Length: 133
Image (cartoon, rainbow, N blue to C red; front, side):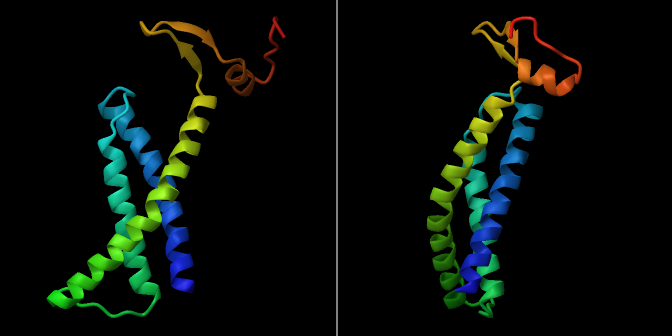
């Protein structure tokens, strides 16, 4: 039972880390456009992390060279994916809401800046006081 909790915790931590990596990869390669294939890759990698950590912490010795052991690993991997999918969906939604709140500015459809977020300016400059509020 401890192995399940530890692997679920590692899954949550790796999900958050992989979402940060996803944002940076989108920024570098796709000019901040959403790239949904990275979500699929993140879920598969996180499922692998959970399955491997479950094997390590539950003292199940595995030798992938045998077909029987390989099937057992894929059963654990499938179970890990079932554990990760709802957790990943919730964490990704919370992460996306956090990113929207921390935007520096709001843009229109033609990519022109409409206004700069006052919270960003107040956080950036300590002596900033808005004239409108």
